[in-house]
Image (cartoon, rainbow, N blue to C red; front, side, top):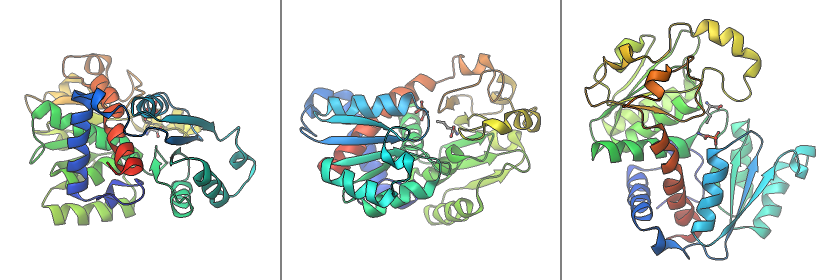
Length: 307
Ligand code: CP
Ligand code: NVA
């Protein structure tokens, strides 16, 4: 049974994830059966950062489940003028049945979860992006018909996406390899937690500076932008530091013969991924994007409807 909130995959059990995926698969196959699952329920969506997929998939998902979503830009609500996070959480809890938040500081989502009496879902922070990583493992299960003993290789910046994929591997029985340039390794605390989770689950977690080593035999080759939201000023330095780290067809050739390419999007073709890979036959980027809708509907129905 899921806890009140979905802030990090680290907080979930393997059984939680399996139940979410089973529900997401049912919702994807038979959406009409769930048209009233969240009838009359409202989701507040707080955004401190830009979004296309998260904003639209959560909004559409609420409508498809019979509820409604309200988009709240942090520029427009009092939170952006200094109203305490705790007060915002307590006030919103009097109006709505759930809160989804995309923030810079991870602590903002933690505080919202602590003070809200309604479920809080992490829609991306500087540290984590759990809804995307869950969706990616769901997509992986669709593509391969199973998850156990498969390998996912992430190549690039040790960022929020890398962290959530590291947390997701042990919950899905997937081996994870993360390759970053020196100086761009994943967060030390996340790494320690993920290592402990992997040891418990019996899955591998490899951290390396060799993208070739990481990709060897992988079923999924994953990358993300070199400069995340909030790091725009570092873009020129990062382009220099990540030279040679583009995911190319040559690199993909080292992966498993049936390997697929994944990217959370938005993608920068010619930087972290070559256009021939991003738009090539192995790319499943738009299936990942679509599955955000189905997986998040399962999350919303589970947390807000206790379905
Ligand atoms: N992948 C993802 O979260 O996309 P958005 O930034 O468009 O929401
Ligand atoms: N790492 C990226 C993911 C965007 C979905 C960012 O935080 O900007």
